[in-house]
Length: 87
Ligand SMILES: [Zn+2]
Image 1 (cartoon, helix red, strand yellow):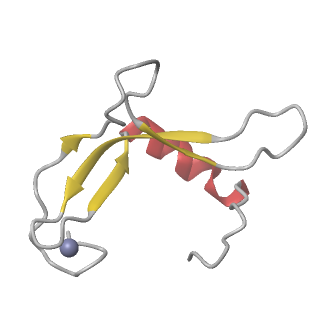
Image 2 (cartoon, rainbow, N blue to C red):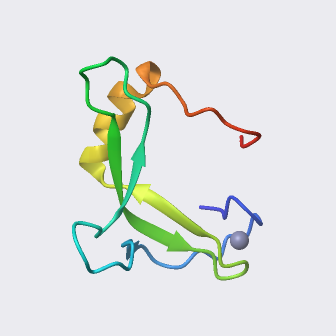
């Protein structure tokens, strides 16, 4: 696996990813998308693991296995946020 930022192959081991905030339910990062109807919940997926690049320090989050399965099944129907120049 390569770092998506610098291309290095020196990624560290998989670690648990948290927000660092011990108050409330903030034990992980959550990827959310706009809701697809007035009464539907926003689609959201928890990223609970990450690897860090040993060369540039970029952190690459990963969805848990069950979240990935759900995300893959729903991804074609998801609508992205307005990108404001991000890709
Ligand atoms: Zn890197």
